[in-house]
Image (cartoon, rainbow, N blue to C red):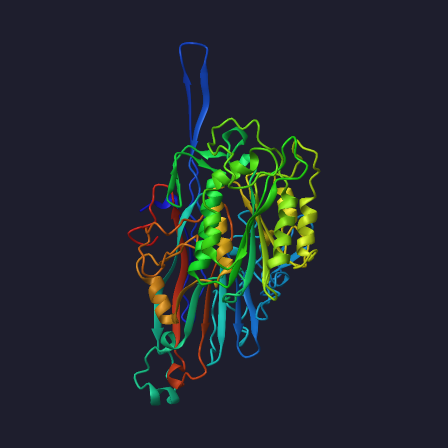
Amino acid sequence: MTDNDDIDTIGLSRRTVLAGLGAVGVASAGAGLGTTAYFNDTESFEGNQLTAGQLDLLVDWQQTYDFGDGHQFVNAHPDHDGDGEQSILDPETEEVIKYSDFPDEDDEDSNGANITGLNCENIPPLSEANFRHDPVTGEEMDRLVQFTDVKPGDSGEITFSLHLCDNPGYIWMQADNVSDNGGTATEPELIVDPDNLGDLGDAIQATLWYDEDCDNVYDGAEPVDIMLTLDFSGSMLYEQYGGLVSEDDITVGGTTYTETTKIDLVELGTRQFVSYLQSQGSDVQVGVAYFDGEGSDDSVPRTGILQGLTSDLSVVDAQLTDLRQKLADVVTGPSPSTPGDGDGDPDPFANANGIATGTYIGEGVDDAQAELDANGRSGVEYRNIVLSDGESFNGDGSTSFSSPTGAAADARAASPNPATNVYTINVDGSASTLQAMAGAAGGLGGDPAFFNDVSDPFNIPTVFGNLAAQTAQEKKIMEDSLGNVLTALADGNGVPLDAIRTTTYDELSDPANDPDREPFRGDGVMHCVALSWELPFDVGNEVQGDTLGFDLGFYTEQARHNDGAGPSQTA
């Protein structure tokens, strides 16, 4: 258990109907310890200082309600103009950015998504939230959910977007003060429910899930063809060029290395990506492309296909094994130099002066697009996930690299076919190029929803986990009556959330400190959790006048020095 300086709680307070949002308690720590130590010579160590870290959990949301006319915007946060739709005013351009700017074109039920540009810097405090009015009765709402005339057939949904700032931490979703009572008794109700029991919680059906694309809609699995386009340049492996991340051990696929490099983390992340898709029975084909630069005598760049598109994901996993050696083979020896030719030294501390130089991201994207064109299935979604730790630049040979932004633009524009969603992952490098490349099929580049900026390479597996979760069907935490969902959220510390949904962690049956549960990174990246509810048409008079009240909340504690077991009691 942590003390109050290590926790951050955002609570949603009780209202005796469906729910409510109330006071926010934010606890953070900041402290300074200054000392000056003088020794008996002329050296000194001045201005020493220790500052306590911070842990700040920020929440935004979009709520909708369908009372017979389709899902209407109810309230959101932030909502700069108070119209119920999540929106912000860009401080630099003064342009209005809103929820409906981000629809899923492939999902007819999608009317937008939580704003991807929301982060730790621009999410306003919950004290500024505007709850607006009940869309049915017009009554003013002073809580998140405050519906006083729910009828059979009505439904609603809230997608909460969680941003953990400053430090990694574990997060729980919680409920409290759950009350289900009969409320006002009417004559028709007393005929079927003479004791006037609280039946609303049992009658309402609910689903709690990870809404990976934050669009307020549960998404099942769709067929997708995916290319993983990976940086095989020397800076991903060799200490000499910045490839060494840590001198701590890492185990990848049963092999333990005594130090950790960027390419090890790529292997770990991509193999988890493939394993998760396989475990979910996803309708996918996956292939792998790679790119390096060129040697002094090269006339063509060292790029190619490591694995062609295939639905046999065990074959893909095998090709993603031992990436240290495969990268070393690509950057070493005369051209053509290929993964598996055995001429490279995979020791990250080896002298790498003679390896090929340069980073040809554009050629890697072109190779991946050609593979999608040649072997992709018709009528599916196409994705290219591009990872690199730097800008494109020429190597020592005579080849002039093509524009990576141009290659990505061609891929998005189906030149050649097919029109491809381009996702990019920047690993501790210059982000501008990879950010400009990212975007949806048929769209422009520079789309933040398709760009992942990874300042700490240890977060590479997390990014691949999130992308895998967006590829497979969204993970349901619980599908039951709302009463039972609230019971689970109110039990103990609540429902422990998992930052990487591609693990085998079960939020309801596994312990909170299970090794498969991962903490959230603390870099403000958006993770969405959604709660939908529906009062079925076939519900009878027994729910007339019934009320259901509960608190909702999210609790976080720092990951360092904690194992995820949580406090002995909620904050």
